[in-house]
Every structure is written in structure tokens, then in C-alpha cells.
Length: 187
Image 1: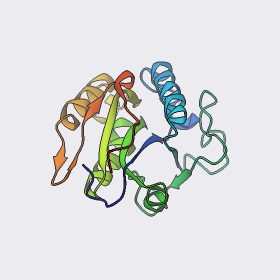
Image 2: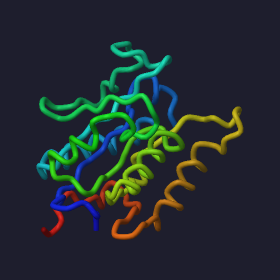
Image 3: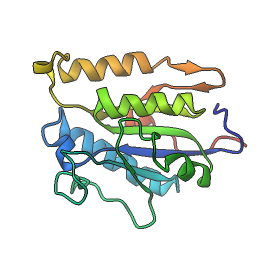
Image 4: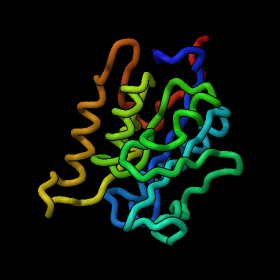
């Protein structure tokens, strides 16, 4: 379990599901549907939902590309973490938000698999969190013209290698959206 003290709660992390990020994403609608169902389940379980939103030259703050997709909507009071780097922990208030909410386990969804999702998973594990990837709730775009494998291979490979990821006192793992458990860990 997490190496962080007094952190029994699990949070759903929704990474960069923004118009400009997922406009041409692989399995876009299926992933958004899975994330939407997870958001509703997390809210019903009173588990925190934390939204992560990227800003850069292509995703200028307050632009249409920067906005979270219409299919998803943060509820009043849910944290929105603004980031400028791929790892959602890097130079953001994500750790402070998680500490305030007593979160030690992250359930990670979003985009892009081969960039911000992977970076955040690794950043979480290094910082002492358990980090579970939802295997059917992350996506990427086709970057084969830049030398990347096809999107389905990127997603499959990430699910494969994160499935057994671990570090002393903490664990990674992959679960399908239907099997996500938001119950707090035993204190």
C-alpha cells in the first residue's frame, strides 16, 4: 500500500481530456464514456475526482482547445490542477490537493497514454502513491508519422508494462473500468 501516512482515500485522476488533446484520439468516444461512468461512480462513492488540464503553446488558457470536452464536466468543488509539464505533479499543486483529501491511491484515466498519462503514473509511484491505470479509459493520438507505434499498440504496451509495476511499499496495476473500487483502504 501507499508509503504515505494517513492516506486511506482513493481518487480518480482525469488527465487532459481537453478538446485539443482528444479531438482525433483513438477510441475517443469509448474512452470518454468509460471516464464519464467512472466519474459518476467516484462521486457516488464520495471519492475525490481530480481534473488535470494542460496549458502550452497549442493549448492556450481559456481557448476552445484548452477546455475540458463537453462530454465531461467537473462538479463544483472538484479540484482542477493546471499543469505545464507532462507529469501532473511537476510544478503544480496536485500533491497538496491529494494531501488535503488524504489520498494515497490514484486511479488514473485520460490522455495522452504515451505522454502525460505515463509521466503522471511514474511521478505518482516515485512520490509514494499507489497508482492504478484504468486500461480501457486512456487514449492517445496516431503519431506513427513521428515514429511511434499505432495508438492501439501504445495503449496495449502501456497496459502490459504497468500491470506489474511496483516499488517498495507501493504498487501500480491495471484494472478495467468496470472493476474499479473507490473504497478507502483500511486505516
